[in-house]
Image (cartoon, rainbow, N blue to C red):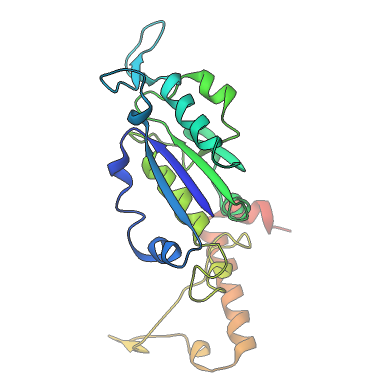
Length: 229
């Protein structure tokens, strides 16, 4: 998989893709994230990529010209399954959406900044708009990193244990059950006996029951939608 990210502040994305699972995915040749500096596509000698909004109001707006030039340049090199715009008014990102995107080959992500992008960009180029939550960030860079991380870790062979992603929270509309590791007793607090039993069926049953209980208590919205009745 290849993910191209367009941003006017590329340094914000240097660290997220240089460590841990995302770095290993790149080293294995399973995923590549390429960050593009929008200012390199500016038609202005001062590398300007934003301007005041027509009609007035506070804040600057990313201009259509450099964005269009960058997107068209990337499209001339490969076909994209989705051109994504990170925006607070987009569709709420979910595990299901991450699963779907992980099956694609080429993704492009445009990061908004300031007051967003010229609306004509969204009308002409964007195929999917995503929000990671009902709040506003300074720009779409951190949100793009969240999406890329959630998607790339689902690609086969990225995780050392391929079953790990299948037991993540939300994969089956349940939160993940509690987990424990050594020591078995810490300051009088003991690991549940069933987890030490070696009885796989009983352990699976315990984990399922715990996942249901935790979902019902902590995310009643998910419980009501997918499990009640």
